[in-house]
Image 1 (tube, rainbow, N blue to C red):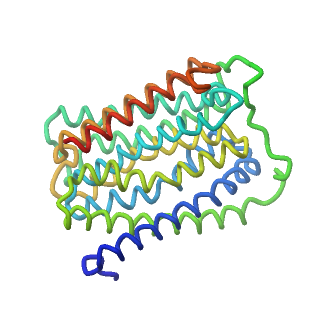
Image 2: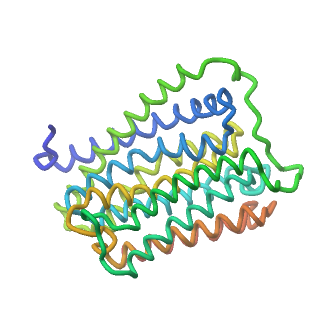
Amino acid sequence: MLDFGGLSLTLLILIFAVAAGAVILSSIKATGLADVIADRTAMGEALVGGVILGGATSLAGVVVSVNAALSGEASFAFSNAVGGIAAQTLFLAIADTLHKKANLEHAAAEPQSLFQAILLIILLALPLCALAGPELTFWSVHPVSILILVGYIYGLRLSVSVRDLPMWKPVETTATHHDEPDAENDPEASVMRPALIFLGLVAIMGTGGWVIGQIGGQFISRFGLQASLVGAVMTAFVTSLPEFVTTLTAVRRGSLQLAVGGIIGGNTFDTLFLVASDVAYREGSLYHAITQTDLYWLGTGLLMTAILLAGLILRQREGPGRIGIESVMLFGAYGTAVLLAFLA
């Protein structure tokens, strides 16, 4: 196994860049395949984006958090998870600036995305409850981790019912985008080949995530950087780049529900980082081993998700600079969090 500790700084940065590039290029290809899978399975862009694509592009981040937790770096593991949620939500604001026809949240409004945003807020609130409560663990795993896992699985079931039996629909406007199969994607064709290629790309993303986590740990130990700073800003942002690329690619392809669903669903999947990290962290409750800065990033993730949900409900056609007011607020919330992280 490669000994990262014996490598020079130049070589570490080079390997870091190669791993990040591999993850990004794999995610670009995975986006197109996810669209094909959505059409050929009739699952719909929002569900495929939220579950399959969201989970796949989040794999690199999972590997980083688990690897950090196994090494006893609770703050690194936690901040990588919640920092990634904040960064990925910001990506929708960036995509909004590129979608010129209408506010992205207006055009891509869909009940499933609203439900998944609410589910994400619930799952992010559970770690706050754990922090406020006693340090109770079973086999070094906090009960809240079990609740997050159960809540995620049950939430997926409910998300399917929201898609199949919607109790309401967004108001039709000239800017409303519909999830229609692409003409070149034959819904009767086999899904096996694109699915296998997709799995191969997932393996590349996971390997890239492991390399990024190893090098992130080296930056912490060599330069005495705060684990929360490296996790929430550096590795979280880099491992979130697949979501950034897939979001922009999906918007360019006109798959708006895939873009919004991929971010919200990917963020919901990212809460499982905390579950996996709590299991991997053998020194007690992960939630009681984090710092005040990590807690701030958790609050930032909650705030940005609530802002996004409000934007999806408001469905503003145009705002300042032709983007929704929620996008302006998302830029402000994330920028403030990064500034405070460097000042801490």
